[in-house]
Image (cartoon, rainbow, N blue to C red; front, side, top):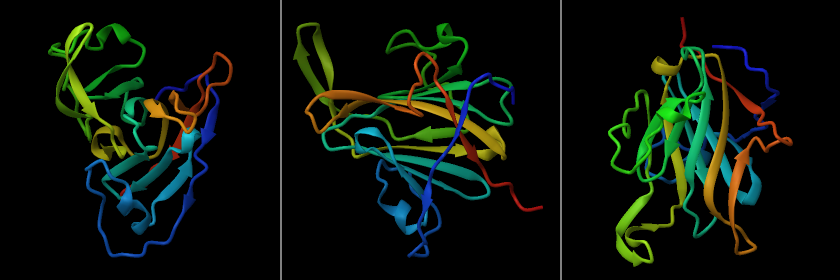
Length: 202
């Protein structure tokens, strides 16, 4: 993993004691089981609730959204088994490309570069038919309860990870639309948050 010339912010997560004998989360766009699993949690801007849970093999992130939010996600990840940071995208489709090479991102909805992902998955935005707009027929999306993503440590490695994310289409209490950045931008700089992932026994 390359050393990045940016500040690191350790995730200020609080842990709760598990209350049920659940094994792992299901990637279904709901965060309700994370508290029962004793997952770490933190409240972000616009009352987005950030949950983190991991075992020896996988790590899960769940971002519980305010009502009437959509939560398209752009997540940058640097991890021990990556030769360079990757950009992971979650909307109606999933995508992945080198963070430093945005020209390698899909440039249209029908690009074959969509779904070229490995070692992670997420719940996508929910398409519910179509609607007529000034620009023609467009897909209609339902608001989501949460954006949830699962990572394989076999692909990304165990140890110290670095992430930063942009969560788009968040409906604020002011009635306006917001993008939630984590960690928040510091001027023109985007710091990284550090996650210490468990190492498999032995």
